[in-house]
Amino acid sequence: MTDHTTEEPTRRDFIYIAAGGAAAIGGALTIWPFIHQMNPAADTLALGSIRKDISSLGVGQEITVMFRGGPVFIRRRTEAEIAEARAVELDRLPDDLARNENLPDDASAADANRVLNPEYLIVKGNCTHLGCVPVGNGAGDYDGWFCPCHGSHYDASARIRRGPAPENLPVPAYIFENEGAVVKLGATSDEVAAAGWSVA
Amino acid sequence: MSHQSTYEPKTGIEKWLDSRLPIVRLGYDSFVDFPTPRNLNYWYTFGGILAVFLVIQILSGVVLAMHYVPHVDHAFDSVERIRRDINYGWLIQSMHANGASFFFVAVYLHMFRGLYYGSYKAPREVLWIIGVVIYLLMMAAAFMGYVLPWGQMSYWGATVITNLVGALPVVGEGIREWLWGDFAVGNATLNRFFSLHYLIPFLIAGLVILHIWALHVPGNNNPTGVEVKGKGDTLPFHPYYTVKDGFAIVVFLMIFAGFVFYLPSVLGHADNSIEANPLVTPAHIVPEWYFLPFYAILRAVTFDFGPISAKLGGVLAMFGAIGVLFALPWLDRSPVKSMRYRPIAKWCFLIFVIACLGLGWCGAENPDNMVFEFGGIGMPFVVLSQILTAYYFIYFLVILPVLGFVEKPKERPESIEASVLGSSPAAAPAE
Image (cartoon, rainbow over all chains, first blue to last red; front, side, top):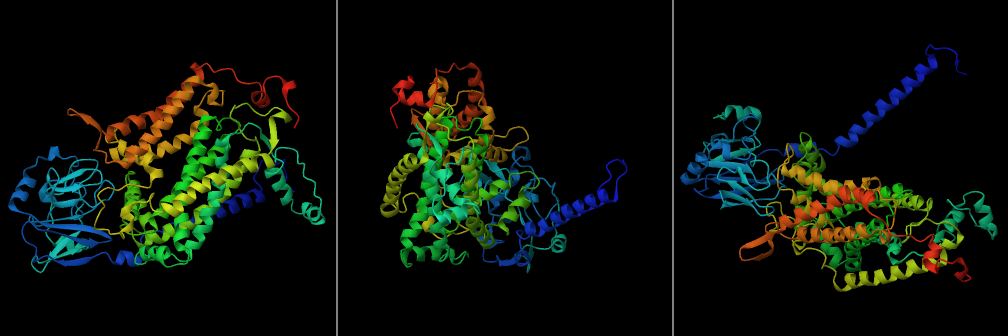
């Protein structure tokens, strides 16, 4: 069989390694479809945008809409709330990033970076701690939202102020249409770029 | 297995089969003539009880799957239909739901038994580790099974637990969406949980075979922790332990039946009688009772620890609480197995059991509620759970390693036979 006296690799050594390598790589490539099948499917991804008429929303009112399987809060803020949110010094915020899909990742958590129109605050409605839906309409110690599950308090800009949640409620990609009467959630990056979003 | 086989095929068919597939021999050597320490007490019956409950869960589960519909629009109604309209569905659904709880009662008693008598020590480390893997799979199966009825607690429990993964740096959010198959817990999640919930019990069954195999190579531990030395130390498994296990199984099933028939929903949560609603979070999300200690550990970490956020810290502590069990055979440095002969470890163990029960209590309460309060001074549950969590880890990581060096064990009997029948071999009665 194999000549054990030679130090040189034989043809058989080469075949062993080539066959073993092909089997290992082939096996690894076969695993990928079985992993990737669990990621969101094409039709799930296609349901990624909705439109909502907000023209009937009064000052100080708040609605919750379903978007991508979860709640989105749309709050038409009062002058007092806007003033309160803008008066907060940034170094008092546990999370100093805007968490705004419409802006660069490093945008600061200033209220101006959280809204397109200061009157309308639009954020995803799952607590960044473990995903519960916080109670709104000025709840909590900071006049915003309060999560009853583990006691996270969010302010009038939906930024985390106290409690176990690590991040501000994220702002989804959105634009206004029909002169502000309609909000489109899940806007494309081109639409966002044309909508006037900018870092304050 | 490890002992000499004493099986002698008597009938023609047994002889014919024995030279082709000696499966009757395997059963005989494992469950009839298997030499078992003669001093096993009732704490040693929970292994048999667990085997019975695995069978109950699989049989009742297969039946439920014939009527259950894993779709977000139909799941809740199909479970209600099982409970109201399917012939005997009320019975089988109750058996399955309560069976999960009793499965965990038995596994916790089984594990505490192993901790007390040092059953994880050499040469039974592999036996112990397989047991911990089985326990992990049981938790996964129970968690996914609880999601299937698609009530409020199902949905929000799933949301909270899958969100834990999001705490991992960098890859967390990608893995979370991968688990969900969506941007939130939804139909894709329910479907895959149903598929995996059906798979896991069969994985457990396979591991149970390995668990028994790993048990039968070194043989049973026993309450003295002294290894079997001679024939006088053991009795054949049948009839001595088939009868003893059988009696314990009957008693345990009687308690189980009491719940199945008279308290079918008492271990569940009222909020799970409301269909899942992604827009309304229940006032107080709690897992099933058997996860409460770990839920308390998760919520006990309320502070950042260096670069580790409180959220990630809680997740690490919760998984660490189970992970530490894998290392236990090497953490406990004492050569003495049974805590009967370990005067300090015995008390530390008792406090450990109380800590586990206390963590369960903390897990059921709102963290900000007060354990006690008078004159403006009190202690919220979050502080109690921090104290108990600290003890949980100190027990494994400090107490057991250190006691191995500083504790002076009591004198142990020279053999199992001597511990049962007195030290004089002459006193041994005839079998």
